[in-house]
Every structure is written in structure tokens, then in C-alpha cells.
View 1 (spheres, helix red, strand yellow):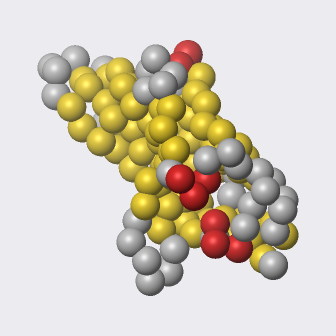
View 2: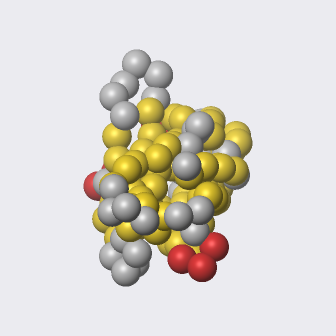
Length: 120
């Protein structure tokens, strides 16, 4: 079993910055990709950014140039630095981890989510 614990959400004015963190814990697994999705009220969940164990990154067009995803493989932790925040970035941000266990079974785990609110 893997647990993901997120932190760093909050409220900020437009143009401000926040940094999200997500730490994975457990035993008997390794992590391939990690990343962040977000879901705003009344909208579908959307990919924000992902990063592989080799640190190859992918971003949604809407956040390119403003958000930076990074990870510390030794700590099984992924970060999302969010700059130049806009009101449309307001959403619940969920961390995920693509894992494989000692039996070669792949499984995705999700965090509980952290609220990010950007006011104009």
C-alpha cells in the first residue's frame, strides 16, 4: 500500500506563487511517473504536469512557462512550483504516482487533494 500526502495549497492573489509537495510512503514498490492533476468546480479533471523517474516532464499548455514540476527520487517526493497564478488556476490539485510493486503489478495512487484558490 502506498500513501500520498500533499501539502502547500492555500489562497493567494493573482500573480502570486505557491509550491505544492507530495510525498509517497510505503514499502515494496518503486515509482515511475508522478504528477499533478486538478479539478475545478463543474469542470473535468485535467492534467497539470507529470515527471518520470528519469525527470522527463510534460505540462498542460495552460501552465507552460508558469509552473515547474520537479521530484526528489530519494525522498519519493514531487513538487509543483506555481508562479504567476491566475484565477483560472483555482482548483483542487491532486497528486498521483504510477507505481510497480515487487510482483511487477502496476498501480496508480492518488492523494486526497489540496485546494488552491487564486483571487483577482
